[in-house]
Amino acid sequence: MDTVLCFKANSERREQIRHSKIIDQEILQERTEYYKTIKILLLGASECGKSTFLKQMRILHGQDFDVQDLLEFRSIIYGNIIRIMKVLVTARRSFEIQWKDSSHQNYADQILNFNTKVNEIEPHEFVAVVDMIRELWLDEAIQETYRRRNEYILADSTKYFMDRLEVIGKEDYVPIRKDALRMRKATKTIVEFTTTINKIPFVFIDVGGQRSQRRKWLQCFESITAILFLAAASDYNQVSLEDRKTNRLLESLEIFGAIVNHELLAKASKILFLNKIDLLEERLTISNIKNFFSAFNGDENDLTTVKEFILQLFSNKMEANNDNDKSLYHHYTIATDTENIKVVFRDVKQTILQERLGSLLLH
Image (cartoon, rainbow, N blue to C red):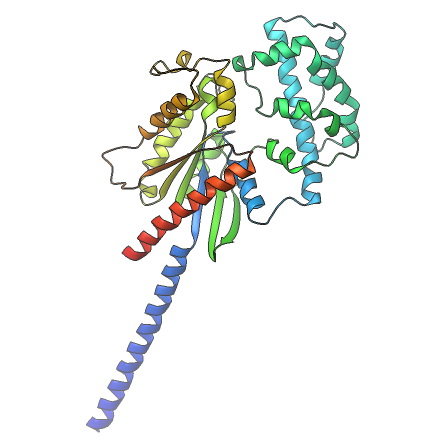
């Protein structure tokens, strides 16, 4: 009897050990898969280039826009162009700049009355006003207003789209990739894009940068591998579209400081994209950074000096006394340039994978 009980006990013990090993293997597999999945959270203030970067990730990883996507973008592009001209004619009036051709006031009134809040702007509706937009753009009053664009808020894509009016104004217009990258549509939901790179799943998460959208950021912090923070370096002389008084670069700095020092993100890699470097170079020729950042004491016309100054502003936001041992990796970017983002992301990917490997070895 004792032998039977002993055998039964040993059998149960072996079964417990076997079951325990299975559980351990499952936990190990889950943990390995968890550490293999790379989750990158894209953060930054409104209009910093997050959505454009996400579009580039789709393009670079085999999910380029198809014809249906491009056709759906038409209405957004039409709306962008009409809103741009509304801003220009309104600014002209504020500056009290006289029309070169007084009859253009009638065109301006018609553009101001165009309803851009409708769900769709049809091609024939845009074609009906494109000649007015072209004539207004060529008027010296609007050109002078455009030259003073640092004094008000104007879309970065203004000249790009105005230069393409002849093409965009055709009834059979189909947007090209560059149009899609330049168009602006505010992100009001959490957008994810998943792809596999070198057999490793990458998940990119884009959350709206408007103040009303930032309350959603916290729910995305869990299990994040890396924070990719985008800041428009060219915003040093711009004010927020939301309150029309806060310096946009200062706002980005405050958001960045809160993000990189957040306790829930202590283990995440921190990557900074100082974006719109092409616009920064252009803007330095018409607007002195010293007028907005008195701490700058270098050559205000030297792009490299200004870039280093802006980078230092962000680096200073990393708290020296926190428990975060992660370095701040930075890149100067042009999100609308596919080749630029291709090169930059290659380095970013390597950085993230190296840090992730280190974390896996420690667990």
